[in-house]
Length: 456
Image 1: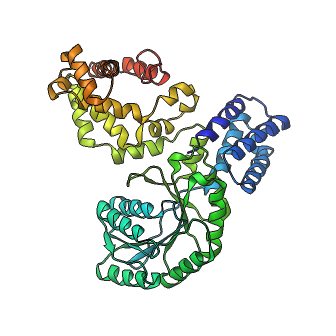
Image 2: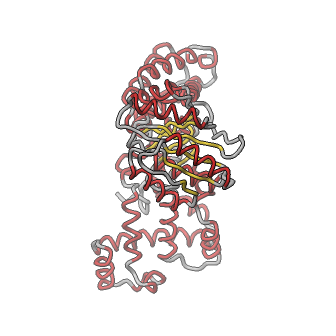
Image 3: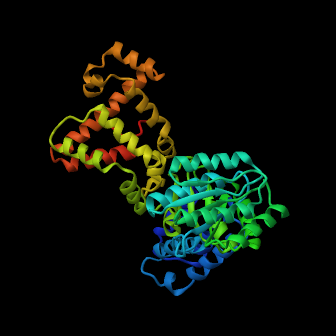
């Protein structure tokens, strides 16, 4: 998300940073560039107009023009206003009520509502230590009920049975009674959707809402629909007291227009974003961090949280001890590192959170994809355990066998071995205490230079 907006704004932001003095002409030019970038990102027009006016008001005020570094001050204004439009701070779920706390999920068919129920259940179980039950009130699609039942089994939460043709209100009232008897903390209700907003759907979900009085009413919307996401959210907000929004499929949306529009249009904060099909691909939305990423400043806090939550600490400690004791870094270790990277969302997600990556040449960024990582893992898996421990054994005939086993070419195997040699060299420097040499290697890697991560 935000890739195209970041790319468009990065040039403007860099020019502003270097200005020792800002004039009305500078500010007009900058806000014009910001306006075009926002419109190209499919941000709703009212949002663009409001945002530009707020930036102008701050830019011509005392805090920018009289600043010692006015260019940087204006960048801060843009960042602060982007943050304000998206909601200022992360809005957490409000579960402070007599159990079970009921969460009602609303949205159109195809937005990823049922999958999001599963993801949210997993999030509450693993991060909030809650006992969760889910129920489907989508009586029009039996497949949706079966899908939710499968997801409940995968994430380890309770599932309350429902059947096509039943009254949705009766289903949810029965589920609440079941949740109370089972001492469940949170009940998540999946509701019916349609391909477009219609009166029958709105009447049904309003009836369910009135009957269960949920503590949270979350609107699930596909980020890839851009301005349509804002329009749909507005329609739902007119009938339901929305407490939050979940943006789905953000990994397929390079523009980010929905994220900048939905909060402003509905008044409801974006609470979560879904980025991927995996059940752990649901993250709390932090407007301040999103604004920093839009301006190419990275998101180191989210990166640190990802590492703390997703990296296997035991494996990391084991590798660190191995390297520090001078033992050889082998292909098994390399495979483990790549699997850890994939568990954190892959190379693109990792780079997206690092400051300054937007300045890398496009051809370098394009090579930072998970396809190459997965191919490398497949090549290593096609080797014997002995070959992984002792890569020097891989002669020509062995390389051909590994290539056939992984569906690749011998030159691909050579590329992996070259990459391994570079990593092994870096680990060797670390074991010898050569931190300066290691940092030089990492710098070359990020730039795509000799020994870089992204070969030219």
